[in-house]
Image (tube, rainbow, N blue to C red; front, side, top):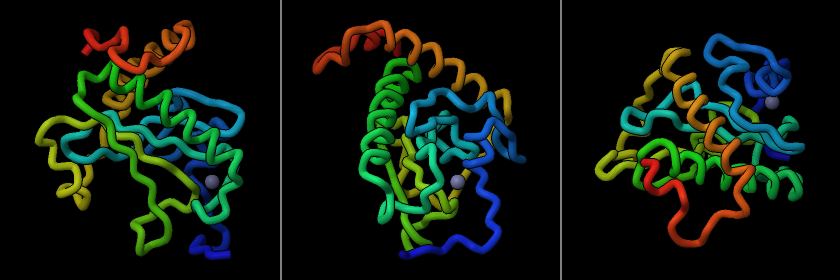
Length: 171
Ligand SMILES: [Zn+2]
């Protein structure tokens, strides 16, 4: 098994999943939970992509290589729900997802996660990956509230339409 997790690693994502807080994240950041996946507002954002979300496996698995397929499927289901909710509530023009494995793959937290980022015309995301902003709790809460509200509404809608969604005029 390929692993880079140091001995005694205190996983910040497992702390959040258990309902705890770290220096940079807390329970208020969590926007959705399923049996196998948890979504929360990311503790750092790229300069022009505020409100980015991380979707993680509910169980501690270091990387894609050993992720149980049922968990991977569940994570992707939640990625889709979060992407639709971001698209409907942030006023963005697109969505990108990113997932990293091992140091050479730019992984820095040793718990499987998928970045879900709002995209805007000319936001330069892939040229700004080396710089990060660290939002305040208030800034994160603003986006968490938007997403929770949108996800709650989505749970009352029949399905994601293949064309125009009802939220298109919402931003
Ligand atoms: Zn973990």
